[in-house]
Length: 594
Image (tube, rainbow, N blue to C red; front, side):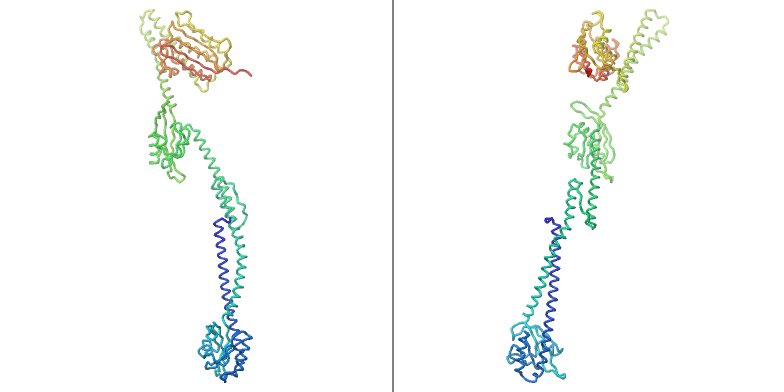
């Protein structure tokens, strides 16, 4: 506390006031005491002069009076004052210290002149006779209205000053004692005044550092106590507000961090204030490293920067769509930039939201392709059936062979139409959110062997050679045996369609690393790399003419993919053009019972 500047200022002011008050009071008291002492001495000299006047009245008729001179010398020695008797013409006739004959005429002395006119005169001056500064009191002596002369009493100022110095010493001693008492008292009062302020400062500094739990233990009812109570309430209020702000901020950061959309907030100078993980992912940047940098340093996408500038310049929302190209993919991003304002409505920056709609755009493309392909696939057999039927109805003379051939085509097209509808219904069931598979513990060996048996050719001339490889031990999976059988049939049918009759097809079943693998390999025409990415799409065909000729719907592999996903599995393909293809359906093995 002793190092506190405020304490030093308060104590210095207090000490200065005390010392000034003591000095002023001491000076006034000393002056008053000195004045009173001089008045007292002056009165004393007047009393002595009056006494001398009574003694000296008979001597004024003579030029000198030895007896009076002796009496004055004796009296002056006893009272410590110089006594002088002066005739009306200024001649000294008796003196207690000097010989009258050696003394000058005193008619023009100041105290004598005043006594001449007023009867009483006083003066302080240097005496040439004595050689010292003296205080003089003179009284006129009259008889019957006639001036006889003067009597005078005097004392050296040294004696007066000695008494005055003694009084000043007493006053100074009293002032010193008062100062010795007042200074410690002032120290105590200053510390008592400054201590609460020091504690308040410490609490305020603690609040600045973010600690709002400090409290002041000051219970006074004065202004300082009220200030301490107010500061305690302010600390509680600030703590509650900071906690509320911190909670809201954490909630906001959590919400922004968990958003799939990218969010970037900048100030008026384009400095990044916030960037969530979604925005960092879209811009291929690190969110923490971008904070505090200009938006032009963070991204080179001009559309984003232009949208932010326009939103702040015009104060309106700016929308747009942009494409972000990376080494792995091309992203389609919807962008919305809005001005950012404070509570008073002042523009303080902008916020831009980036929504990756690449998947949505792909789904829209798939949907359009699906509708177009489905329309085409359904239209072809329906058109063929209608034309064949119209021909049969219109040609009454058509021969029996031709009619039979037309009816056969109508049957084939209706069968193809039925297959398409059946596959569409199966695919719709698998893609439905409410679809529930009839899962049970099944031996995948039985499912595979049972499902492919009807597809095996009876003779070598009817199709490629099919070889089945399965382990002796059961391979148990938790699944829908009908759906798994359909997936296996579709893979085998696909292999048989695109493999020549002198080719070979292998169906292998095995377990590895906790998963069951159904592998269908053929020596057919193979699949080009560009087609391998799309063969699991609906209605996609590598060779459209051959597929339709063989009665394919273009939905078989798409159904396989959805059956695999429904069983938490995968389906993949490996192939080279002219070297056949290998499809692998991978499913999780069922857990062993406890």
